[in-house]
Amino acid sequence: MIDIHSHILPGVDDGARTMQDSVDMAKQAVSEGVHTIIATPHHMNGKYENVKSDILPLVNEVNDVLKKEHIDLAVLPGQECRIYGEMIEDYHNGKLLTLNKYSAYIFVEFPSSSVPRYADRLFYEMQNEGLIPVIVHPERNSELIERPDKLYNLVKNGAATQLTASSLTGYFGKNIQKFSQQLIEANLTHFIASDAHNIHNRSFKMEEAMDTLEKKYGIDMIYYFTENAELLIEGKNIYKEIPEKIKKRKFLGIF
Ligand code: FE
Image (cartoon, rainbow, N blue to C red):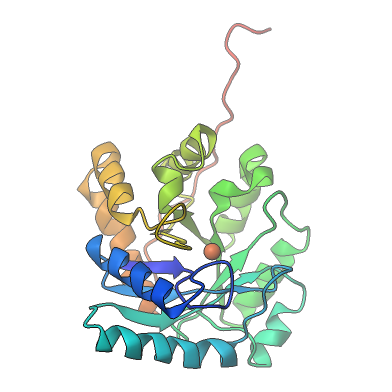
C-alpha cells in the first residue's frame, strides 16, 4: 500500500521530532502494509516553511537511515502547502514541490474553517500550468461541511481530494466520519492517506480505514483508492467518477 500524506521527516514541522521518531513511524507504517510513503511536511501554514531544497536532502537522509535499519519503506518527496496567492509563482521559483517531485499533483491545504474566495481562480490557473491541485482532508474543513457544494464545484472543475484514514475510522468524531462517507458516496474524493504525525495520537490507521472501507463498500473501493495512489506516484491520470452533489439532511417532522 502507498501512503501519500505523512509528516515523517524529522524536526521540520509538528510531525516526527527526531530521526528516531521517523524510524518508529516507518516501522508502524510497514506493520500496516505500507511499502511506500510520501513525506509531506507543512509549508506556509503560518508556523512552518519547508521549501523544496530543504525537503529533498532530508528525504534522502531518512531513506539512508531506513536502509541501514533494514526497514522496507521507500520515502518519496512531497509537501503540504497551505493555500496562498503566489503559489504558482513560487512553484516556478522552485519553492514548491509536487508529489513525488515529478508528478503534476500538488497538495493544497485550506485553512481549517474556511475556503478562500480566490481558490477557484487559483485552481483554474494551476491547471493551466499543468498542475493538478489535490485538496487535503476536505472532510475536516468546517466551511466545506456546511457547504459541500463548494467542494463539488472544485472537483467538477478538475481538483482531486484526499481523505484522512483516521477520519473514516471515527477519530475526529461522528460528524467528520459521516461527511467522509458522504464524500466517498458522492465521488468527491480520490485518495485515502494517513496524514500521520506520530505513532501515538496521530498515527497511520491505514489498515483500519481499509478494513472499514471494504466492509461498507466492498473490495472494489479498496482497488479504486490503492490504484489511484499508484497512478499518482507514477504521474499518471487517476480514476475519477462523475462527482455528485451531497444532499443536505432534512429535518423530518419540522414544518
Ligand atoms: Fe498533513
